[in-house]
Image 1: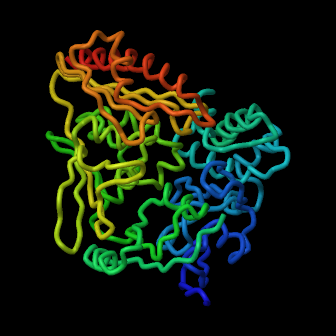
Image 2 (image 1 turned 180 degrees about the horizontal axis):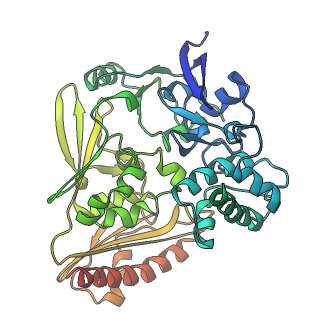
Image 3 (image 1 turned 45 degrees about the vertical axis):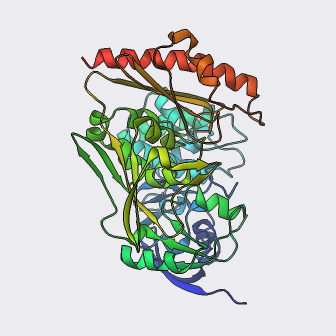
Amino acid sequence: MTEELHPVRLVVNETAYDIRVPARRLLSDALRQDLGLTGTHVGCEHGVCGACTILVDGKPMRSCLLFAVSAVGVEITTVEGLTNADGSLGPVQQAFAECHGLQCGFCTPGFLTTITAGLRDNPDPTHDEAREMIAGNLCRCTGYQNIVKAVERAAVLGAES
Amino acid sequence: MKPAPFAYTRPGSLAEALATLAGDPDAKVLAGGQSLVPLLSMRLAAPSALVDINGLPDLDGVTVTASGVRVAALARHADVLASAEAAAVQPLLAMALANVAHPTIRNRGTTVGSLVHADAAAEMPVVLSLLGGSVDAASTAGTRTIPAAELYVGPLQSSLRHDEVAVSAFFPALAPGAGVAFEEITRRQGDYALCGVAALVDGASVKVGYLSVSDVPTVVDLSGIPVEEMGEAALAHLEPADDIHATADYRAHLVRVLTTRVVRSAYDDARGRR
């Protein structure tokens, strides 16, 4: 039995992509396999780890808990869309580099998207708010201290720019 | 970790969605999907079809009146939490919603979906039960109102029929002079609670709702019992169980400690509103 394919238009990082996918294609898999945007990482695939977090109309959501067929009519932002217009690192990316906020980097795309949205809502977080901002993302390398520092550094960089 | 194949429709009207559901007893409704998609990915559920209601008009929004808060089917947890009007009319909503998973999940997950998912470890079913709210369910036969007391029939089982869509939920307003409080204990912030307690006090009336310590969302009337003994009294109605996260004894301990603490905070809340 061949599975029915559904035509879907995904708008990702301001580019429209027309793809045909089975209904069960997770958005995380569509981004990686159908669009070739492998910056979004797939960890637990049941919404716990946060590695696949993307922005949907600016709000962080788990791409592994969305179906591609259901992600129509929205603007999606992945980690590939977080750089500045000139291709240089965006403020959150720059802060991660400066603060050593990553080691293996697997979880990093999910942190970057989550923090980008978090700082948009709260541009000057307290230390506790910075911790709260990343509470839904797991990192198994860093112990989080440098990620929290990166949130605070990104807030400073964002205020300067 | 990939779902089994299923047919998919994204109806443009509620009537179309209801007709599809009526024609396929094995179809499921997809709203936020934050509980459903993991179940599909782990293949704990394999419905024949998903009826995606995210494209339906008029199912968005949180409507607040003096009598309470009506939450439509596509209102996300984050939408309800962000409503200052809703928090003013029924403060228990925001108190509990802040404990529902993480903000990222709340951005997509719907409050009504959580209610009819009927997980006894979830916050909102207990809140609806404690407040005596209701869910409106539509089918091709019409719309009926299901009181919370008749909604939860077993573990992960609601009385919503397969051909029905829960179109909204109603949370009654806090009565003048009454108070509410909510607290839960989790291993990590955003995890399922080991035990959660919500309290509604109004004069001598004390009602307390429990999550994660029974198979179904459970509300116990503890009026007339000394506050230090309320937790012990509530345990007669609860079934805390052992699992990988906590022992039954520890959960029972949390029931005792949290009941006293949360009932006292509810009285503080009531005093603060005078």
